[in-house]
Length: 382
Image (cartoon, rainbow, N blue to C red; front, side, top):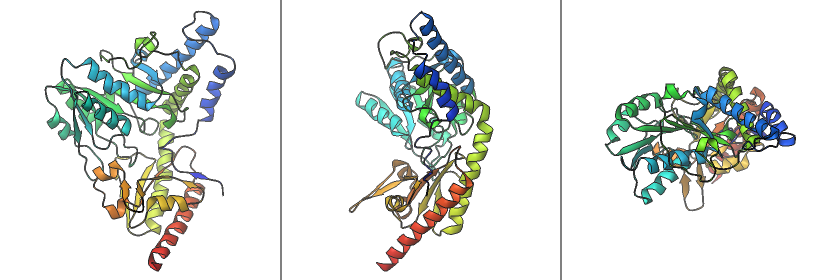
């Protein structure tokens, strides 16, 4: 049986059109964009075009977008950059308890550097209450960092509402949009964000490339020092090949988002319905309607997620918990949502993509049924 990939939230394959756009810059156009000769000018034009493609997707200005090595660097630059540049105002940052480690670990590091961080709780669906943000803001608050959509359960956070609050208070808003770009609309003005992070490998571009949107007028302390690449924001010779790839990937999103959304939601809903029909004692995690169209977090009561994944043949997904002989490690997101342990330990994340087919969903359901039934029989025998 050919493998069935249902882990698109972890990473995506490179879109064939993205790969094709990159090829000339692998084999022919090898110039340094900082050089003034013909090969250098051609490379610079390619970078400028990619930046334009990215900015158009976000509804941003071209000079508000810089390329990075990925979502983690973008998050680091945004949060550390604000912390360093606005220390005269304060040292308080607000974030949520369900953020990606690329945000949470940065905040914990800044606490060691004298920063003060408020970690907001979430409800049973993994959603932040915008009023909590308003209540947590103080005169020393310099940044609110809330993800647009959760990578584990798919819940879409109320960024528009939070953005109105931060603008009222004169506080900067950063959003990790690694999971939302390419799945739902992401427009910087609609969201009201001042900083926004993108990871290329989540949008069918290569790994090792990302972007950071920086609204005009926002100050950031530099993360990378050296020459004045990326309009002075980030030193280092430009990764032309992958910038071109990310630019093309963003153009595809801009032109095809409605179709991508429709297809992913159709496949996700087919999987969710199939699980509901075949299994008892199931819990679906995340908001029932305000959820990414491709993401399904399903908890199988009394089961062990890592055992299910180990038994699945040719079906690739992710676990929300790791069960060891003496303890169970549950993800921080499921803990924050207070998912009962009997469900949390059996949580799987399925995330479909542009290439997922109905046949793959049906075969995955058959294989999942085989494994769950086998585990149920073994439990009964014990």
